[in-house]
Image (tube, rainbow over all chains, first blue to last red; front, side):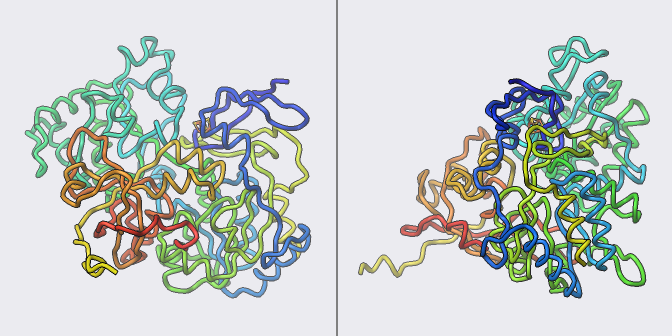
Length: 414
Length: 134
Ligand code: SF4
């Protein structure tokens, strides 16, 4: 029997039009989702089980052991949250307060600065629905949604016929890619691909700024000034422009100052917005939740006397400086995503992993606690890459606890 | 034992740029331990002329080295029309991450997308298995 619509949690686009065929409480077919989404919704081939020191245990034992490790730790870290619901994130923050822990997420080494600037109202932003209905210029900057967010272009940014963009991509929209390589998305943009050298973003911004100010743009990498002037013209004439900022841009800029300057300049003549290309489905949700509670989006230490924040409380520096003596990892696989040397160090700390699937971190954990897959086996809410809250529905039944229930139980035992 | 065994392969300087790939993403959703995930994540894509210079063909292995790690990777030839000498591409994953330096100058943000390495041809070694990376 077909059911839906459901929400896919494969990426922070949170597509909400998913249909699934269900037979005997099993998902046998998924429609509308991209291939990545289908794999997410159908579930992984190696589900995680509850273990303590490599031995299979029941969930109560695993929870008790996790509580013991956290209770006896002097400097615990709670990390992950990107694949957790808002409800779970609230609970992990509460737990961090209770045990005087460090808390951080992947935004600490990816889209954090952009989300922070948006929440502090330094960067203008808009919703993906506005993009669909209004945007006439879309810029993929250091981003390749064709690979990272496969339905981005078809659902919102390029192909749809929006209310004010009835002629769609053929006539009504211009797509531009600025990147260091001709990605699949860049290939779609034809001659509107601007190839820049590694770390050339800030120089390119300066050149574009000159062109927007009617000066001849110069670059040390000899990009044809005519091409940059042509781009400036397209941007000036735009009614509703959006920059989709990817990791390529974030990692290349030492500070956001050039980007803020550019956006302000663009907004002198037209309307321009920025949306960060958030990866994990609810990483932005964690940043919003922590921001609401502490005024910071990540890298927080709930000390006994006061809340501290800064790069010294980032997961990278905490591990580099051997601060952490136990870590709870939830909805993330840091051993796969951190630099190798840091991953090795983290693997030597007593680890607790809460996740539906086995991953590199769970393999090296002292305690693993198997949880329900959010958006499939349990419901909740999450925040999409553009800041819009989305409700996740449950598709099938499970006897696994949700992340939220597990955190609540751990707290009960501390 | 041949004499050639004691000759060291010349080393070439490269910058590795990482990116995402939908097919690796799919295999990651299915299992981090699957062959497909490993195969896609351990490939390094090189410029055709660089490959010629190093005497490499597609499918050969290279040793990628820096102060952070030493990783054996499989070589593929670039499909980009424009030459990119000295720049190699890898899909983001544990193999590329092994080579990312831990030192961030106190900023907390490692250089994930611009990894400096030396590459040398490897005659006998197999691609580093996932379990040896961490
Ligand atoms: S684009 Fe993202 S949210 Fe949409 S179906 Fe694909 S993985 Fe799921």
